[in-house]
Image 1 (spheres, rainbow, N blue to C red):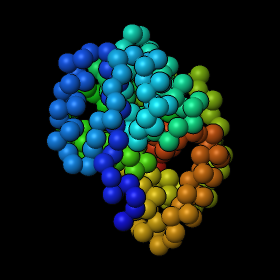
Image 2 (tube, one colour):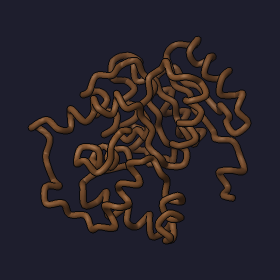
Image 3 (cartoon, one colour):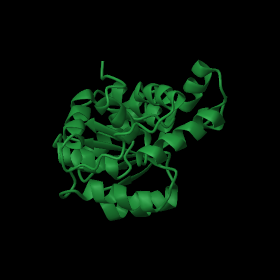
Image 4 (cartoon, rainbow, N blue to C red):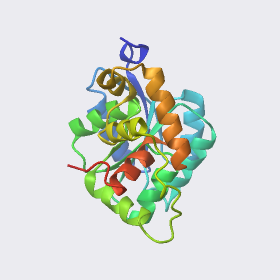
Length: 221
């Protein structure tokens, strides 16, 4: 059992609508393994709270005054905090979705998601696993596939083992699960994962998952 399982997942909720923050607080506080440690109504507030509280997961509404959520996510990434970001939104525009992913968000979910499903996604992201709905993933893929995107990977620089690990990552599996499945150490999986991201010029597991989907190494079903 690791330390993260001994204490609740510490959450920061960021949304410009108080009623939505209240709803999240009420629904998520029912879970013994989660604790709302802070709330913010805008990007600047979110940055201040994140630096002060260093939450495990930040739930952020990307629909705050145009692109504020994406910009805040980018600024949080610059702080090199350990906090992982889940974007909650009604906006499924492909370019905005992809901007959010590039900004370092680990999850991108629609705001009408069921409370229990959201809790499951929070647990996944807290373990370092990407979380986004299939329809949103398809929107992002359509942007990635456009001619304007640089293609660094046509020569397929990955080793067979790295491809195997990438496929498992795309299935939403964390390093511990992958290590068990492949009978190797978590440190070995972590090393392979770092090599994958470096070779493909990617910055996180979400981008790696989208790469795997685009290359046909994994599917959404």
